[in-house]
Amino acid sequence: MRYWLFKSEASTWSWEDQLGKGDAGEEWNGVRNYQARNFMREMALGDRGLFYLSQKEKAAVGIVEVCAEAHPDSTTDDARWECVDIRALETLPSPVTLEQIKADPRLSEMVLVKNSRLSVQPVTEEEWRIICEMGGLAT
DNA sequence: GCCAACGTTGGC
DNA sequence: GCCAACGTTGGC
Image 1: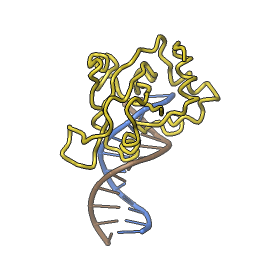
Image 2: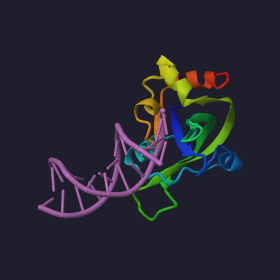
Image 3: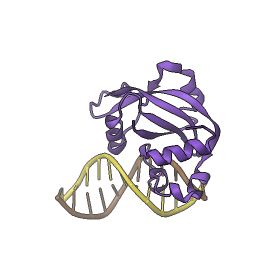
């Protein structure tokens, strides 16, 4: 299984919005960046992801699961753009802030730190474990 | 609200 | 195919 990070702005798509979709999940659409799209093409059913909020919160707030592999993005006719579907699995007992992530030397290589603008990014298993721990989840 | 970093576009 | 111009993102 692989691990990922999905970035959103709460004003566009919040964790509550995601939770509201329940087990059916929702398209992670609207991505118009090749790197991000390519990562979504690599995703497999059951892969896990962190749900991260940029701008105001700047924190990972929940865990999601890929529940549909890459398919055309329904918000455009442009065949170049594809997306996966994700569903909320659980809310982190305590959100893990960007500040905390930056403060931990073990996480200094995270894409989130190195290329903060990429909206869909891979997370290593070690990074995943550390963040879950910080967020109050047993792994 | 500012600005640096980055990606994309389009003229040549 | 290069690169300047532009638009967008996101941390501060």
